[in-house]
Image (cartoon, rainbow, N blue to C red; front, side, top):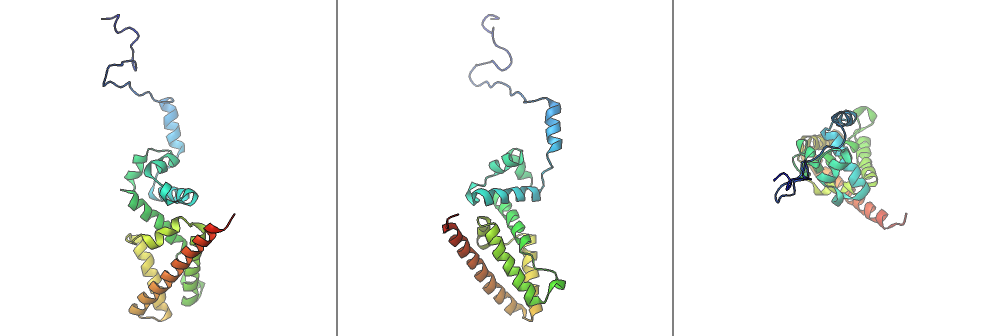
Length: 193
């Protein structure tokens, strides 16, 4: 029996159904050191990296596994912060909304601030053409997205519109600017570099 097992040691058992034990790469100290150098994961860091992947390669190239690899973690680690890809895309959408935030009251009249907000929407289309598609296709259901809506509607009310007209003009202008942004993205995509 000992002769039959000769040459078999840890990781060499070739009996069916048996796996060789995994060996860690590097020492335990090296792994701890690598973890210390890597900034801790949080929702913002993950969403920023997801936005970078979308910007560089397109929305369809984003996966939890790919995102984890880019962040230096297993893809499953992302699920501690975002329950699914839809929630992750909501986090990316929130980053875009931050770039379109209405300016503070001290920066101009309500009409000037509205104009600046919609100009920043166009700028987001140019900076993030692949991610911009999230604006017209995702439901704004997160707290941050709803707060953005409320600030924008309040700005329409500051212009002098009642709640009903504020909602109507918001839909009108947001639809127009988003459509124009999509048209510009399409036009730019057809232009040679």
